[in-house]
Amino acid sequence: MEEVSLGVPTKIRQDPVIIKLLKNLPKGLANTYTDEQLQGMRIAVGDGTWGKHFIDNRGTFAFPFVPWRFYYVFLLGKNRRAYTRREKHASMLMFVGLMFGFIIISILFGLLTLYILKSALGIDLLEGTSLGIWDWFKDIF
Image (cartoon, rainbow, N blue to C red):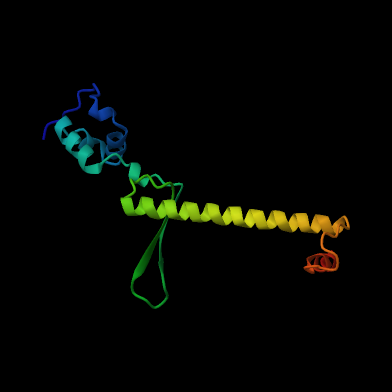
């Protein structure tokens, strides 16, 4: 095979994916690829964006007395895939449910705070009735 690199970098040879690929090859072999072959490798390798995760932890481990090694992969990152109609529907239901739950918990916490504040100030709205929350709160603090 003849050497193609004439010292003038072509557009494909300036591609970051191709640069990384050729860097891992012996210099003599890296220079033997034609631009057409590099284009084909670029298409086959892809753009590599699928491998960029916030957390990308991979490794192997072995158990004693077991002849095999095992591998693990832990990936965490933003989902860049397009949702299907079913996933969109489930996502919307989950969002509405979480918002509803947050609002209910916030209202209950606000009412509890107002009740404790009312009891601390000695305001008795219904004479002789108590939920017992103020007594429980005083016992804790």
